[in-house]
Length: 430
Image (tube, rainbow, N blue to C red; front, side):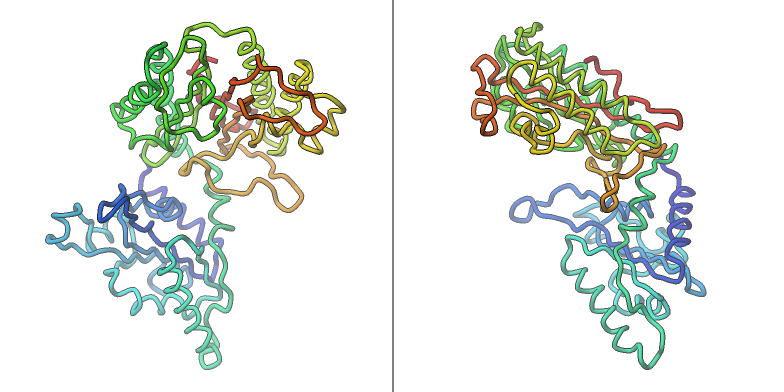
């Protein structure tokens, strides 16, 4: 559980960075599944990171230069007639006490109250998000302030995304955040280990999916962090296969890419194993190449190393393995430069993990890769996919039929520590 003191510390750190600017954050929009049926609400991660507030139609304003109010919220007021349909609201009075705001207004007063927190700001920080209506609201206020600048001599003449200052903060996980992630990963480990015991020839992929997601909810997770991938046989060669409707056969591999969300913090784990308990010789060879690529890539997760070294290491091991099988040929450096391995390995070796599955933050700054720091969490997930339609790059060897239909990915969640790394998802065998 993240305590309010931590949200307060995050806001203080952010306000120190924006100085005499004002930052605006908007809650996630509600979205409709079909007709008038709404999806379950999921708060915007940036908004949640600085407030912990989990309701729609809300705005948070940070104005460190304001004489009285540094942290201001606009929220939906208490209205029983609406709450009886869509759930309880915190309301204006309780939000001030519970979330530590200096002032809280009803959301309907946004246009009236917002200008006082902008008119003396030197810069306006706001990220243009998916809610085009609210984007227009912010732009309208900004343009009005710019129009009045000649008379007042104050106001934000520049508009800058909050991402550049907030996302580097979000990349470095606090002890409380890591505890939430450990819980998400521990639940996901239970689900993966159960799935391995449960899966057998004759069952359907969706039955395995149901077992996995049952464990997620049974142990207090919000649900899947992303659509669960349960891909048997040739389906394992489809990266984002989500139909999960095929009956599993004796000689199939089963690729499971699944993780839960716990308090909005996410796990992301992939394992591949034979449904019948035994690899074919070809499956075993491909699996061991991917496993070695992952081992060597994980070894590169340590402070001071460039993030790109994880991917580069995995790619080299995969290429060498494919060359040994006669599926690639030529000069290794040329194969890498011209990406001749891409028919078999078309994605990167991982991503940041946190409040979002593909968490925020850059991977390089200009031409320079980002340097790993303690507190970052990355996934490491090399794979090889040789589908029935896979075609080698021109000039490369043809694919013998015995290799087709084999897809393998192995993914772990890895914390960068002060001395190296910790594999948080090590509880799932591989």
